[in-house]
Amino acid sequence: MQKPENSKSADLGGGAAPSSKRVCILTFGCQMNEADSENIAAAFRRRGYELIDDLKKADAVVVNTCTVRQRAEDKAISQIGRLRKWKLARPEGKLFVVGCAAQKLGSKEIKNRFPFVDEVVGAKAIEQFEDSLIAQLGPSPDTETIHQNLFRSPQTAYVTIMRGCSLKCSYCIVPAVRGPAVFLSADAILQDAAAKIKSGAKEIVLLGQTVNAWRGGRTTFSELLKKVLDLPGLERLRFMSPHPLYFENDFTALLARENKLARYMHLPVQSGSDRILKLMRRGYTRGEYLALLARLRAAVPDLAVSTDFIVGYPGETEADFIDTLSLIKEGRFSLAYCFKYSPRTEKPEMAATISGPVMQARLEKVLAAVKTNSRVILNERIGKIEEVLFETENYGRASGNFACRVKAGGTPGRLLNVLVAGADKNTLNGKVL
Ligand code: 5AD
Ligand code: SF4
Image (tube, rainbow, N blue to C red; front, side, top):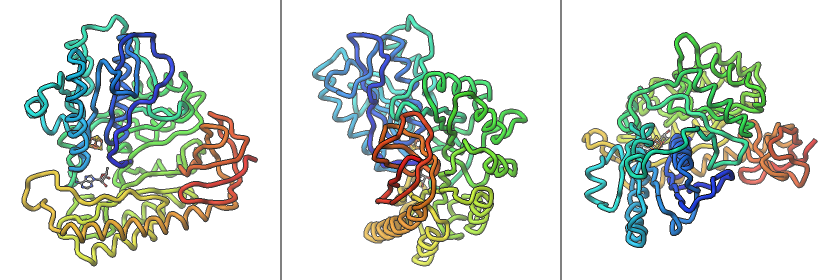
């Protein structure tokens, strides 16, 4: 799921070895980047570094960049620019620029523009980040893998199951910067998940750009889900983000059967217009997408579905846009992330054709429609019982990914039934049963 392009700095998880050295990691973009940042943090921790939020006190800084839209890239780049001051104040400090924008722009351009950057590691080489650390800081005395969780509540852990993407959506830069799809082995995935559960995770989120495209020899995605579901100690399993093309028949049966599989899915649709979907090379029609939703909801009637929309795709007419607006209601989305089209290539046919004001007006309309629709979907939950995984005494997430508040009675790390009494913006309110 794509979130707004703000950076997240690591929260200070416990367990850092006492050290005089500190690292600050600034992460832009999606959950894949967050998961990469966790691995980077583990590599620093093996060298005794403590993770901190405060840039000014850092001996090393990592900027993990995004380039999915121009705005995301610009934000990461201006962050690097602002680090000039940090480097001046601390010339011995090490600055690493990593991730998708680093891959797109290349080491040469980044070092030309920002000569104070010490190392550039593109998204395709992110698994070799350790080599850059060795180059800058020397080898680590400790080779142990640290399973940790930096950006979320301690009971949720990310497990990357695939990297890259082999689809060719016309607007998307991800396949170019992350490369074609590569699947991790079932054994490696299960080991990672089991270790994270052992360190306290109750909820696992399997990650990949087209996560349900995963295959491991003859093992299907659903079979992998089943293996993860069988790990002792796991309370809930999520995955992000699936692609409509890759759901196999065995999935709906699993979803219907397995309560620990979250009653939620983020299933990006991008547009409600068949003409635009075809231009985008999404591989499905509006009707096929809706038929898939119907199939999933036949298995789990209260399944919550969120999505992504792009408005202002080149050549998008008013009629195409109206098709997108109508899909919001028809798809019964609980939430949708909406983006203005951002050209990611120089190809003339991919240049933006919709004027800025029209693009903005469409974005505002789609956001308003999503807001109205979300309220309807949320209100439907009033009077129902939701299974909530609590993060604090008062707050947790329902299986359908709705935020849920109670006055008292929540136990962090536990799944409890909550009777929903009301809904407010994006949050359900209720009482622990
Ligand atoms: N312009 C606008 N939005 C984009 N996305 C991906 N590429 C672009 C682009 N060029 C959006 C899609 C995707 C989400 C991660 O980002 O909606 O699902
Ligand atoms: Fe994530 Fe890279 Fe896509 Fe940004 S461009 S959303 S970091 S995969």
